Length: 130
Image (cartoon, rainbow, N blue to C red; front, top):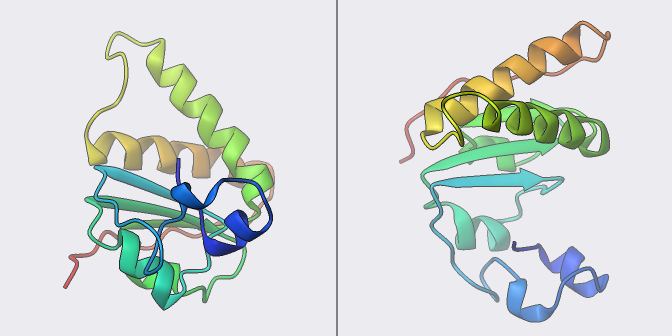
């Protein structure tokens, strides 16, 4: 678990969990950015992740520029839905999803479920990182 400077400064995580230019550089298979705006400093610490899934209520947040998949919505509504979708996936015969396509599929299925409740979410298309 990592956090932005705001999360660290707010006391939610200790400084050794900060991701970014003044923190750590991470390269996970899947990076889930919840409420991360995508400042240049933060992107410097996580932009090399294999798959970036971003959730932000601002559809012009810079994090979407590098995200492979994005959900424009309230992280406090989206996160529980994604969590439930991943838990449901764990109960299937496939166990834990491991590929980026599996995570993207779960996110898409969650998005479709959310649309049924009238929420407005938008996914960015998968794109190659430069």
